[in-house]
Length: 162
Image (cartoon, rainbow, N blue to C red):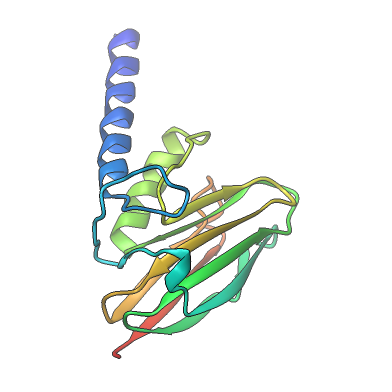
């Protein structure tokens, strides 16, 4: 019984990771993912960046800034800095996507990410996400490390019509 449960969990993780890799888009790190526009937009290229926003992550379980406004079709370079003493991440997604991934992170807290809309950083590390916001509406972002989202480590991006 124990072995079967482990095999099921591994299979579920593999299925989830393969699905997100296909949906990941073609991000600047050059991993060759198929271009795909999601409900929150798509991976952008460094040559089309309209502006850069620096986002700080800290151990008070907050992002600074936590509320961002962009225009539809705008491409942003997010410079993300972990200014805390523990590992943090920034994941862009719909509320539903983030909550689904949060549940998976609870089961697999050391999961590695290779999606263009996510970056995980150890203390003192800096990373970036380049993202084009193709649809008007709200895009959510959060840290999905166990306990961080629940402590309030989340934010919103308001995408206004062009």
